[in-house]
Image (cartoon, rainbow, N blue to C red; front, side, top):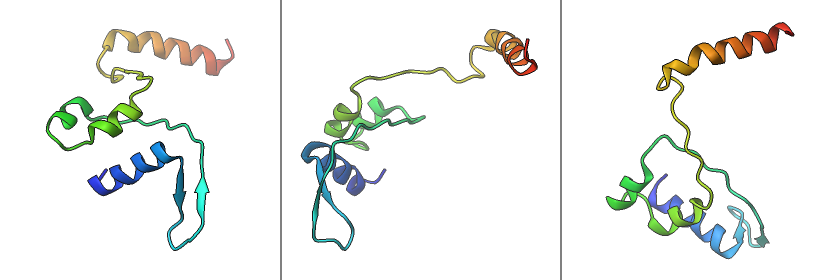
Length: 89
């Protein structure tokens, strides 16, 4: 996300209002954001590539998932589960 887009998203999250492109009317909003990334945002904040204040707003309830290929021992269990599920067993 570009720095300009980061500032716009942060403004919407903080002020809970925005204007449409080409519009003149301010629209009130009350939204929840679900965000996902495969990048290390802590490192990006430290290097100045991602806004710390936006990271703070988005990091309210983090859910960390390991890549599927990483815990290889889980793959046979997952395969068995989905075979049983889709075979109606």
